[in-house]
Amino acid sequence: EPEVTQTPSHQVTQMGQEVILRCVPISNHLYFYWYRQILGQKVEFLVSFYNNKISEKSEIFDDQFSVERPDGSNFTLKIRSTKLEDSAMYFCASSPLRGGDTQYFGPGTRLTVL
Amino acid sequence: GNSVTQMEGPVTLSEEAFLTINCTYTATGYPSLFWYVQYPGEGLQLLLKATKADDKGSNKGFEATYRKETTSFHLEKGSVQVSDSAVYFCALPSGAGSYQLTFGKGTKLSVIP
Image 1 (cartoon, each protein chain N blue to C red):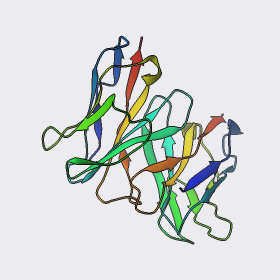
Image 2 (tube, chains in turn red, cyan; image 1 turned 90 degrees about the horizontal axis):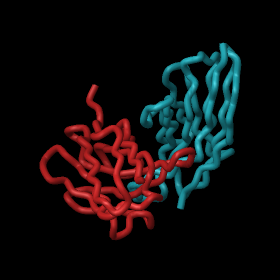
Image 3 (tube, rainbow over the protein chains, first blue to last red; image 1 turned 135 degrees about the vertical axis):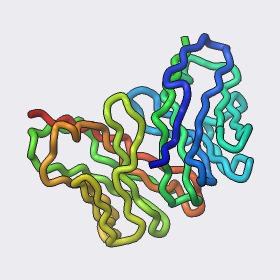
Image 4 (cartoon, rainbow over the protein chains, first blue to last red; image 1 turned 180 degrees about the vertical axis):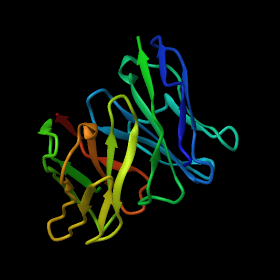
């Protein structure tokens, strides 16, 4: 069964450094998402992406964040200058159709900012 | 926008006990409703979904019925196993035409032998 994959599984970085989190969505899916989950808290939406542009973003997704689909398979989340409060589990998801349809999540990348 | 209110845990049950985790929603229209599960150290997995009122979603012995009269989507299982120990999240699209899912706070279930 096709799966969403994410790399790395764990990333440790120093405050102020740039990080890129990578995702490979399910191959025939058209919509891509990033969510995050701070330890012990609820899952929060960051951004959705369709047709090579951002469809929707939350207030969390400020100028420090960007997303890109650099080729036909990868979907990346970049944090330009990490802060301590960016420490969280970041989940990528994809869906074949727009909102309301099932989103399939990857295993997550745990980001630790020191 | 749409929202969910989910029973907070933690919930501790003995093996073979009956499980109910409550979820109520506030929504415009009748969006799809989802239950996701997060096993220890893992990501989110879709457990089940229902796409319209009165639909029943089911998977791995879990069931949830989309009830518009009570705006609820409670998760049930007749006989839980130790392997069901996980955090369960109720979710729905945040609004008509929205791409984002809104999640409940999650309910941690621990099943003891």
